[in-house]
Amino acid sequence: MSITLKSEADVRSVGVPRRRRRRHDLAALLYVAPAIMFVLVFFLLPLGMTVWMSLHNWPLIGRPRWIGFANYNALWRDHGFWNALAFTGRYTVAATIGLLAVGLALALFVEKPRPLVGLYRTVFFLPVVIGFASASLLWAWLSSVDAGLFSPLAEQLGLTNGRINLLATFDPAFWSVTVMVIWKMAGFYMIILMSGLQAIPADYHEAARIDGANFWQRFRFITLPLIRRPLALASILCVSGSMLAFDQFYIILAGGPQNQTITAVYWIFNQSFVSFRLGYGSALSVVLLGILMVLSALQLRLFGDREPPR
Image 1 (cartoon, rainbow, N blue to C red):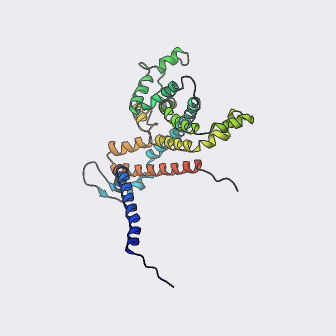
Image 2 (image 1 turned 30 degrees about the horizontal axis):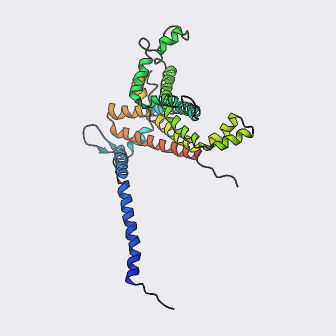
Image 3 (image 1 turned 180 degrees about the horizontal axis):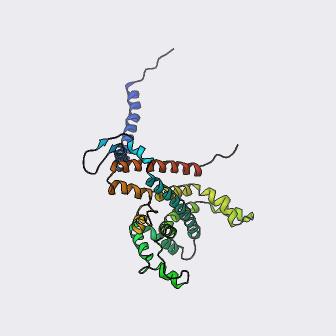
């Protein structure tokens, strides 16, 4: 058996790629360092602080006191939070179905080149650039009985006997805010779904049309399966945004009528910055984060790629 000895030059030649890889790794780390710092400073550190606060009796003024999981135990007896969470779930279902349906309909309408399609896309997307606070103030004015537009218009068209206050009872107030959110955000989901529609090869639809498939069959068996991933993204963003709803209900309804439109975030806001129970508000925030993670995981599971049967 012979032993081959490597020369000093061979050893140096082996070390050069290693040093080069280290330099490449260091350069890559420097490129992603700003993103890492952003996530660390604006997400991980606040999240860790929130969890730490949830384990304390944390007053606005004074020294925090360690109480362990007492805030989480109190949460189970907080009927206000569970009522707010139930209302948030109802709003999330209504807003998600409405946004995805309207967004997909708009995406199908503006997907193909046609006259004035650029104008249509701009008009549909324009409400997205309006802030939620501004849109909520505009909608509150439009819904006003005396100075608004909706109530006098409904009276003139004969839809109502006299002017009615759309925000005085639960059902009209709930659907009024839901319609406002759909009007404002449908253009955003239109863009996401339109990108998925435009990625579908035209040959698929053409072949199905030649085989005699109608519009509904092409939509069900070609369009929907091939936009599963954009639809999953739109669904996750829609559910997460709806579960975190606050501005529209705070500005338009202020929790009314009779505190029936208080969302989960609205309740957390009241507990944290009105009652000054910052520790308890942090515990509610951690629980809401856990619910959002579970919902997102379920949606990823629902829209995930499925292996074909063997």
